[in-house]
Image 1: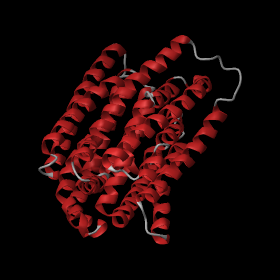
Image 2 (image 1 turned 45 degrees about the vertical axis):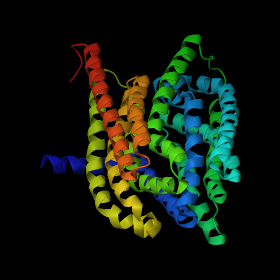
Image 3 (image 1 turned 90 degrees about the horizontal axis):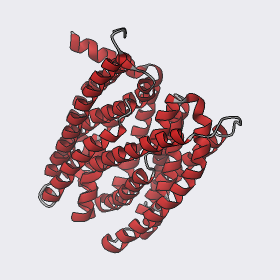
Length: 428
């Protein structure tokens, strides 16, 4: 009965309030991502799919490192300092353009090197040289909306970049013979559309006069959280993509295409559970003492029950769904996808735990949890890449398991300290 009540509560929480809205947006983004992935996989084949995966992986890492964690810092500090939002955004007006230009330059150099070494499509490389800049501007808008608890705008900006590519991909596949460059454009155009809307909105928010500029102490706080968050987000990106980043350098792009299809097929679990951490982060960040600890435990429980609802059904569906949806050429992705499903479930829980660590003011520890997991994944991929894609998937799952264990241990310690600091008078 306890199990049934827990699952019923998870279902109700997913359907109501900001969490329900965000879960619905995640479902739409998930459907769009799946549809775009299916169209590109069928139209491009494993080799073309591998080219597209290779072009997107490195700019994603560049964007995470180059943002210096300031988007995450914005979300946290806007939740903590609601009256200083305009001052914070005015300060960022000088930071964001510099980041965008630097990311574009680094992306162009990296992708050109891939063109020379791995024969990456040059038009695709030129397109994705600009992706990191657009994604950065869009993410500032998303994180500012999250910190302000404006989840309508939060989800709107995410939907543009996450769901519109599928529409463009379908139109492209219907009108012409889709190439990797055309598939890349279908992802790039909505990213810049979301960036434009985010930039205009942030400009308006930073216009109200009268607010004092950020003090040196406030700027140090923003930078400190940002540096720690950058390390944590970089670790998460490495842990999530270390297998594909390493595979891309060791195996033919067709093998990378099959593995990326397996990863995409197992990804719905993480997309659904992520809504829990997205919504709970600003709420938990604003709490103190035992209330903060209790809210953290509720978030972890909700994520766990949600996984119990989704993961078993997906595990049953994968063996017939992958060949049917992606095509017979991707039948070899079934076993890696089943193994990756376990890793994705652990990754989803680790992602919620990491959001709670950020809400507790410990973004830097996430770099330890995810960095350690990423190291396990990278080493396992280096050893196993030329032997079996399923073994690589197992190494990736082990990396996520290790990251989750470290995150939960740190959360437990943070909760104990928070309860002690709250004092004996705190209501339990």
